[in-house]
Amino acid sequence: MTGDQIIIFDTTLRDGEQSPGCSMNTNEKLKVANALVELGVDVIEAGFPIASPGDFEAVQMIASQFSDRSTICALARSRDDDIQKAKEALASAEKPRIHVFLATSAIHREHKLKMDKQQIIDRAVHSVRDAKEFCDDIEFSPEDAARTELDFLCEVVEKTIDAGATTVNIPDTVGYATPSHYFKVISYLKQHVSNIDRSIISSHCHNDLGMAVANSLSAIEAGARQVECTINGLGERAGNAALEELVMAIRTRADYYGVHTKINTERLFPTSQLVSSITGMKVQRNKAIVGQNAFAHEAGIHQHGMLQERSTYEIMRPEDVGYSGRNLVLGKHSGRHAFRDRTKELGFDLDDAAVQKAFDDFIVLADKKKEVYDSDIIALIDNRLADAPERWKLVSFHTSAGSSAIPTATLELKCEEQPVLCDAATGDGPIDAVFRAMERIIELTARLEEFNVRSVSEGKDAQGEVRVTINVHGRHYMGKSVSTDIIEAAARAYLQALNKADAERKGISEQPADEVAADSP
Image: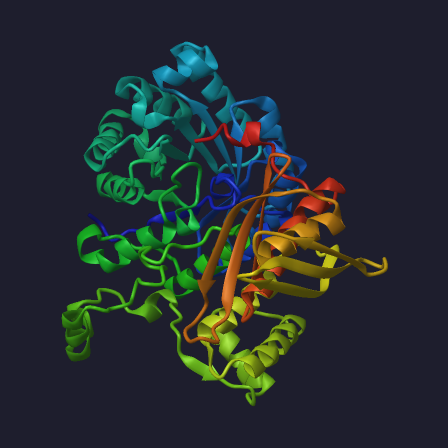
């Protein structure tokens, strides 16, 4: 293998956002896009413009703000109106790409599209030519390629390259492939498509069988030079190939793969944390590269080896991926400048107003805790970065509970310029009582579907992070907050989720159209 570059195509903002409960608004997408640019991603698939007005706006704004540093891509089905929307959304982009897709497998031809092979080829060619009128950089995906007959797949790929496709993406749409199977598919295309040298081969692997990263690496071995992936492996169903795992596999095993990427790996951990915070999808502790345990060594024999020589049990350094541990860094007497310097070291680029707000939170926390850790600071900043509507604000709360008492909560909430509203409720515990009282005041009934608590750092005075997911009229809303008081953290997290539901009820925000977004590679 030659020492050439692998193009990193990130689809967190499109395929990743299609994870249940992971919808992002435009401002949140802009924050993620900025992080992806700082990470060094080559191509950002910013969204599916025809899916909703919100998706269109997000692609349009990302194209206008970030296209000077990364290629900005918009997804479109092989339909004229889809491609027209993509063109309009990318109008201001310096480096635009339109990604056109059409299913090719027998099961999709027969049951979804009701089209024969020639009709598939004709539509694919027409769509690529239509997109080509707008820009030179065109990607075509034969959806469900891994389950498509190889000879027909070759024919579709060859015809779309002739029509102007500069990248041909081979999706394993349902995560059906194995590494050897996927290697053979990519190899077969290289051997049997006469004009394959005129296009870059790309991989797009789903993780239904847990092999998305392995399959993507097999594609690289077979000659693919673009990999499509997402931060933290987000995506429909079991997700996509995880960007951080692919990038570090390529870097750590450069001796084997002989390729490289342009990714600034020290931005991997901060970017992972940002996406987790915005989407509400917690990174599992034992997740490779960016999980909390990724660089933890508990077994005695491992610890002994690490003390003697790090490479005995560590194939990557924590600093290589920007990992932040639990180092004690600041106290209540630390100044604002020291705090700002530490936030920069932790990977945050905050303006003066954001630094001041986070510093104010830090001073309050330092009065409650003896020791403040990096993870505490990250949690405070994530809490401040949460781009959620705040129509309702928590003024005060009081709870009463005990083994022989009925749990009761009394709350005061304020809605914009209106007077403070107060109400009380009982529940099967103090937190349940708080939630019920909030719903009474806001006049919004929700079903709690997920309630997760974790310690941000160590010690009895550690901050607790609470994440909740609620269901209101069939839609899911996430809330997250941190505090040394778990009841307070739960109250603020639940209020954040209720605020999102209330904002949508008032017509303030939009969600993507699920029926359109679900139809994708």
